[in-house]
Image 1 (cartoon, one colour):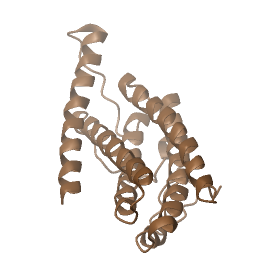
Image 2: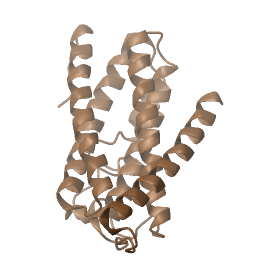
Image 3: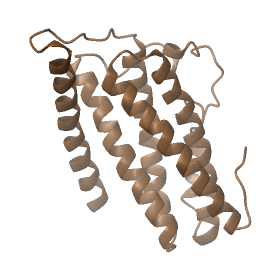
Amino acid sequence: MRAYVGWITGATAAVLVAAGAITYAVAEDGGDSAPSTPAAESADAGFARDMAVHHQQAVEMSYIVRDRTKNTEVRRLAYDIAQTQANQRGMLLGWLDLWELPKVSAKPPMSWMGMGGMPERGDGSLMPGMATNAEMRKLGTLDGKQAEIFYLQLMTDHHKGGIHMAEGCVAKCTVGVEKSLAQGMVNAQRSEIGLMADMLKERGAQARS
């Protein structure tokens, strides 16, 4: 329950930050001018919707492993990822609210990147890097070193998929603060992939791909 309450608090704060960021960006652009609202099927809206879904699974995965291991290093990484991505998810959903745009789309995920026709892995894996439902269930059955290795492998895949999508926003999105957030995701997740590679090596394992 404490984790759930913490997530709600973080997400709420992130929405307020998102509102402030957009207000600031509009003021910098001309003070009295009206903000430019992205269209429902724009890259800005598509990224916000899809990355919110992508991030939610990372948060869930991180809370699962936190309860499956006593290793301080893995628990700290999982906590940092959960908090960061929950707050970013709050910003993305907050922007959709501010733009008065739907949080779901009838089009396939990542259509805004021109990837709407790509085959899905199925079983809950809606976008590249996402774990399947079976993999999430498996993570919840492992303990100790096994849980740590599987989490680090799943999260490495997850980050690679997330980086690909964030780079798409950097290239295609038009809202400055959203492009900046996407670039920040790229930088942070690349760094974490390197960290997780070292952590896997310490456990006699390696990334799956």
